Length: 136
Image (cartoon, rainbow, N blue to C red; front, side, top):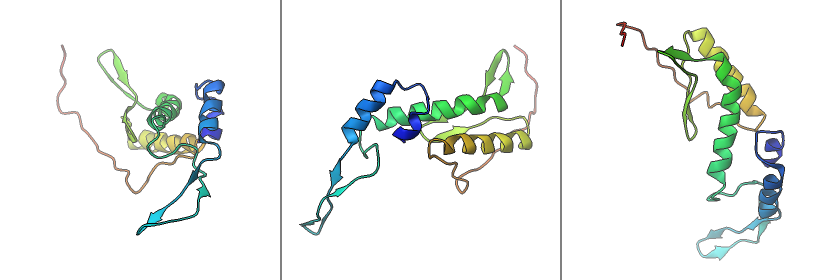
């Protein structure tokens, strides 16, 4: 994902170079029933368990949502909510099925620039209908 981050999602280039240097040329070995394999080069830029992984992923999701937010949202009072996200879960409030589908397509297209994709199998939509009008 580091190569994709170079495209400009707000991570300083010097930091990206440091992260690349930290992971460049890393190798792994696998132990199976006490036997250790020969070492092999890893191709993933961010290693599993790396403390940087959550921060990089969070920035990547923010970058994606900044581009999708202009296409969706609901307004409650004076506040507009365009997306609700936590880790790799995203909720996109939309005023119609067409708007939602368009936003999901845009999200998948934008995420693909970072080698990420919407999991359509896990995707679900919930429809909420307005029952009462409240004024405060």
